[in-house]
Image (cartoon, rainbow, N blue to C red):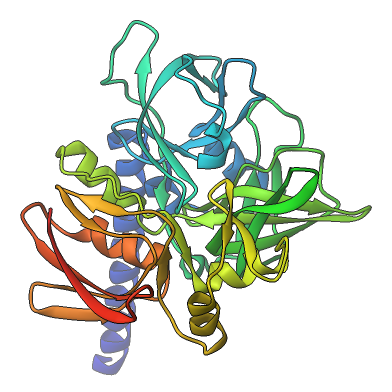
Length: 376
């Protein structure tokens, strides 16, 4: 009898533990649904046992059609409770100060102010305000994440314009890649920009839609589509990743963001530009032809790493001149090699105001090492 009571007691304890887990789970789920109704990522992180179309409809709540002037509408996504919409920088290549409109799936229309733009990240961040000027609107938002943050079922969804049909698609493949966009300049195909930190995804039997953003099914925005190639049965899309968005928005809120303009290319970018060269010594960079010196080509052919400046890099009245190759950065007693423009900007945007940093470079005119100290 005592043995039976012991078994019964064990089953009761197990049942109570399981019941407690279930109650905790539903308590968290209800908290996100009712306590944080605008946090789409929070909801999906604890309750994502829905169909792809149901999850996609939730993502559409944070997705906008962006438009200014006569430009065709393109997609932006709200990634912060304060109303910060991310979209692609190259969509603003013809922007001349026109009013920016954001069209929500709910039918609401908002204005957006550019608070950050970067060609290196192919990123623009818009601060949302109402047409009446209110900047404290509450809007549905998602968090940003990486490629590895998804693990339920078919992992990814591509979400297009909220005003288009067929704007929710499952993604069949996803992997990191180097992508680029080509345009026509002087009657010749040239590389307009290179995105070294991006992902490529494939959609089979896709609908005709802009596919403006790539999401995972646990509640994260992975990237923003900037280029695509279509055939009869599928479409391959390239999306810029968003690794620095959280940090940039945090600094924007605290009025701590600093804009760094680094005109030039790293050698990974050069390998792409060079495929579209006008001659053996010219590439199209930053909207103009750049003639490569013998020293640059020697560094490139020897497999060196670094960022070649085609224009002066100036900050707080300190200048590092063009025709230098930045090879490393040092700050707070720490030093690391730099191989890409994005890597350097990632580091610079992570530094706090007051930080002193040193860029080590090679001057190709004098063939000497230069160390230039800056203060944020």
